[in-house]
Image 1 (tube, each protein chain N blue to C red):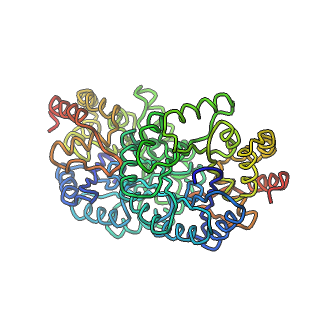
Image 2: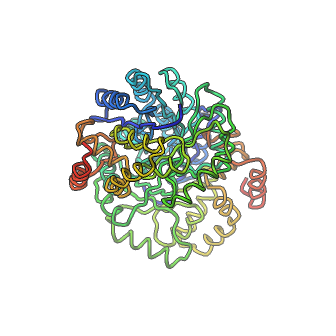
Image 3: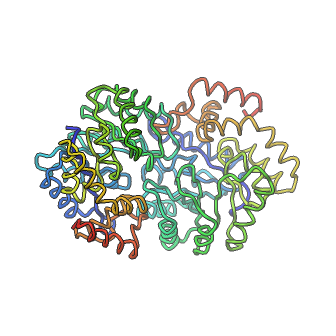
Length: 296
Length: 296
């Protein structure tokens, strides 16, 4: 279940309320495109900004509208007891797995994070995906900590940040992690520009931001990589360079939100304030890239 | 009102619930020691980890137990609408001012942060303290942004991070900020080891972690600095070097929690999980420093 393409939909807001119709539309679009799993309430899904009640509702809507596609649900929060409550809600909604990033306000120690994952895996019967996203959590995992956490019963996958562009270095990094964790725990790449490189380097799954809004494109890339059509995968990823450059400049969340808004998949200004999203000039650049790359 | 010593009490937890008795004890201790203001629900008060209801209750208890001492209340949250709700609750509780840090999960732009402060100052009649705490918010203010925000009606003070140890550099930095903001907006130093240097460099107020647990010590330091007894202030701060070194090594929150627990002012393990606080060996070192410096 933790292989292939896991697509991360936005949770679009409208006037500070979850736009349920837009969210359902995104989930149905992902299921129709044949993604391997849907991760609701990832960073792309703004989990950190939503109330427990909003998250519960979003988890329910995701499972109800995903058809046969397994739904993973982000349960991260600043306080362990809040994480456990979110885990209960996700289980109740019918999630197939839980995604957990060690959110921080005060810096966390490795032991703090290990004990968080221990508490969660002891609390739930669902598989847990370890979510390493230092750009948002400001916590840096070591391979040693991956290894400690991956031994916990129930840990199913590790979502790692973008890999080095150099393919030998990327391969070495993935092998280093691979040799430190149990065989049954998969490794997932994030950072969309790093996806093909990551799959080529031995990652089992792509945890994808862009796949949550442009699933056909991400499915195509994933299948190339899975079928060993390496040159086709690289060619397609290179074709998308302008998109990856926007991500590097503005962050993938703001870019994908602008794309979804432009395509009518989300209402204008769909991110939670204080995140204003891209300004008019920046949106014009996104629109140009959408047209040039034929993403619509 | 935004001068002198503002003391930041812990919000001690016991079994994942706010220990109201311990919190009330801390607030009463601060009022009795003659601090100039009390800031409840600062970073030291674990605001980021508490629910809206818990925060409302803590704000009420602070105001009810502070006597004549003005109470400032931290209202930060990841989402603007949550911040506004916290502002309403703090006003309802009788807060004298609001403390606002731009918490982030996704990185914020300067415009995002400016608009957050604009929304809050438009929403409330209470004075607002700008809380610059890059170690926890991962947002870095520029002097230009201080200047833009300080122009907003209602902004009363800016809480800046620790200054350079070099006193000429510290003085230059404070003057740079001073010349960029309106005269009526005070500048407050944080980073306890930086307090005397900051007050000497022209800061008007010390926003103090240690003052929330050891108020007499912090009052003494503040009065020396305010009365121009510079050498006494420096001598006292130098005397506390071992304490500042613990802060540098473990972070002031974990150290002050260990001190409060050791002195019986807070229950054991009073920080919100996943923050475990110091281990036994580290606590033994804190105890040694308490004894050596006669902090009890």
